[in-house]
Amino acid sequence: MNEQRRFAEAQSFAYQLLSDPDRSVGAAYDVVRQPGEQYAEAGLPRRISYLIDPEGRIVKAYDLSGQDLATHAAEVLEEIKARS
Image 1 (tube, rainbow, N blue to C red):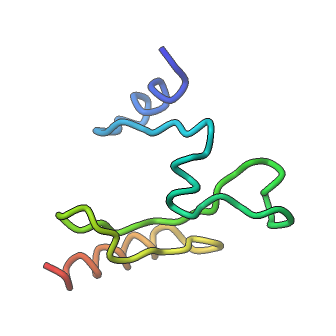
Image 2: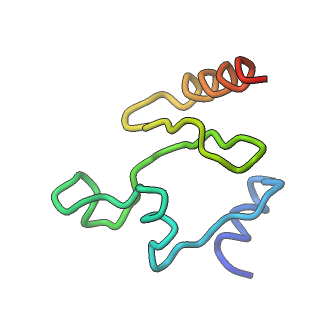
């Protein structure tokens, strides 16, 4: 069993996690950090959330740099309600 599966099961996630070892998905979603950016040398992606509509289109992106996750979650839920 791989590390991601163990983590997902330990957290009781009801969805699969994505592994992106070549960073191709990160590049497609513009989360790869540029040289000189904080955490770039560690290979950590930027923290971005995307709101995706039922047709699969990105309708809003949220940059989570330094944001409180509870506040962010509330903001996303409000946006979903406004679009429903």
